[in-house]
Length: 130
Image (cartoon, rainbow, N blue to C red; front, side, top):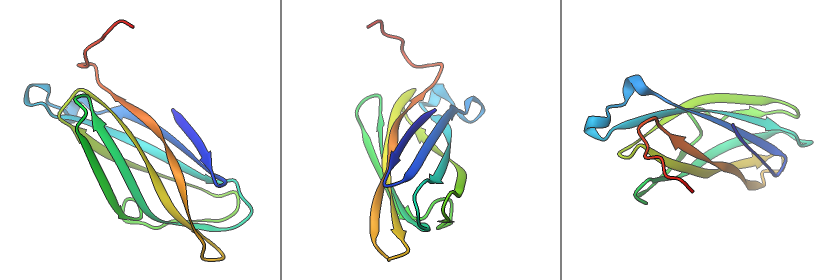
């Protein structure tokens, strides 16, 4: 589990490898991740958009931008939480994801919330001693 609070929004991410959807012989590795957003601030906010920076084990970067998350632009009242699950696929057995959410407060001010970097690990990744 990975967690970070930015601008009174706590983002917690839990990734998990989907072995049944992955095919290492075809260089296809799939993960799901559950994100929990918690509004720890003093005003209502809305998630408007997302940005993901995904890096595979060879350094290849994918960038994903879009409106909302899983087809929604959730509103979080004071103390509210919102949770969703999504997924990512890579051509390597490991990688890392990070990003930002663009949010808007009651005053229509836009601000960014950081998504903590989190590791995508599979049983097929090469183990290297430190």
